[in-house]
Image (tube, rainbow, N blue to C red; front, side, top):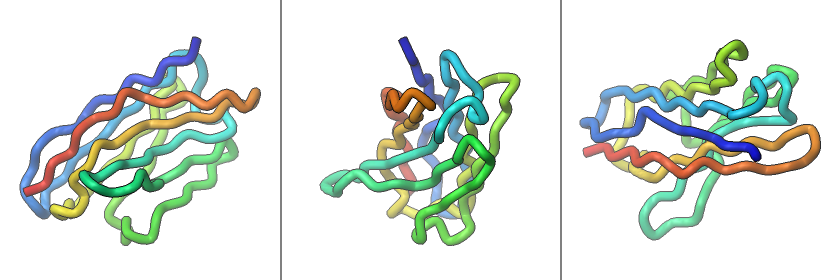
Length: 116
């Protein structure tokens, strides 16, 4: 049973930073097909934020504008999302997602990020 445990959300002012963490219960990122982050802002559709492929490739949504950085700690089965220069429009619930090499897709419970 795959579990994704997120942490690091909170309330910050515009221009400040947060780091989100997502720990996979079974595999490191390089043991998965991919792992990444989605978000859902109030009244909006869910959208992709950033994705790390198991082979090391990183992809970011256009709205990230080089403000966010993915990193991984394979020894801890953890993916990090460093978010800098946060804007009020980044306010959302951020969800971690993983896709295993067996195509199983897991979702975290979500962590709230509020930027004022």
